[in-house]
Image (cartoon, rainbow, N blue to C red):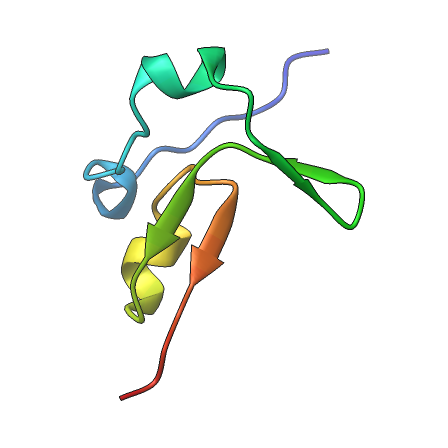
Amino acid sequence: MRVPEYSGNLRANFIHIPKEIEEANGIRIFGRLIKSIIFTTDVAIIRNSNADAVIAVYP
């Protein structure tokens, strides 16, 4: 069975975390391994990134 796939224009500008982060040890918080953190309050950037965690500070 083939699963249909859709890729629109909104996902074209995906923010990829560098490949070197996969080799990092990371930090374990509440049982979850975190290797990459993105610092932003923009929901579109959060949604279009592959970071393990988000730090969002409301000004």
